[in-house]
Length: 271
Image (cartoon, rainbow, N blue to C red; front, side, top):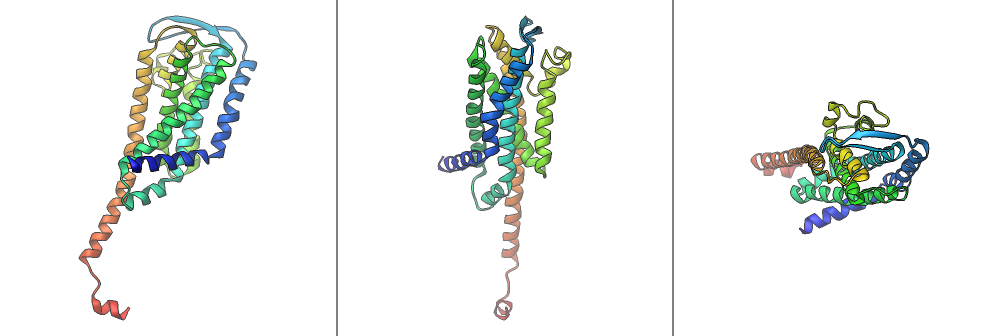
């Protein structure tokens, strides 16, 4: 527990030092919600909740604000977790080689992801509530939190697997834009197609729209989103485990070779 607290504290300090991410939270998120509310017309749009089969009608600007908030939190949390994982990979390997247990080190990443997601998604929900009143604001925040956790786990996985920083940033942007752009019923004519059910934020989008415009508790949609988080999180933690294990294996192999081939005293004296 002591090592877990130490790793979590230093992880949170690393996130706090990411000034670009802090700027995105403070400026980009409310600016995105404000611009969508002003630029998009209030034309009514109909969409169907697949978990219940109910057809809802809502203003286009409000639907776009929910989509924009989901897009913003996925980008921000995805960037934060990718940047922290990518920049600290060598340090994590050195910690593992020095004997730091990998379990508290991995759990600290999950704890930092949870804390960052709670803070950013609470802020995003508060920004939306400044413009209009969702029917279920707590469930709306929970939907934002679930998709933020999914993309945060994706950031950890990409930060461990990819070798270049620009590749991870580009991957997160493109996945988020395609994922949520196709699900916006105002911007995409295919938002009601069967294909969108396989997108990473499908459960969160369905849960967020249900929370914003109905009194339905979308438990099935939350379950779908948590399944996505579990799958991507497993990939990220497995990749982290493999990276640090390879470092430990090399260290043990070098130590055993040194023990098996000791340097003779005569050679040592000559040197």
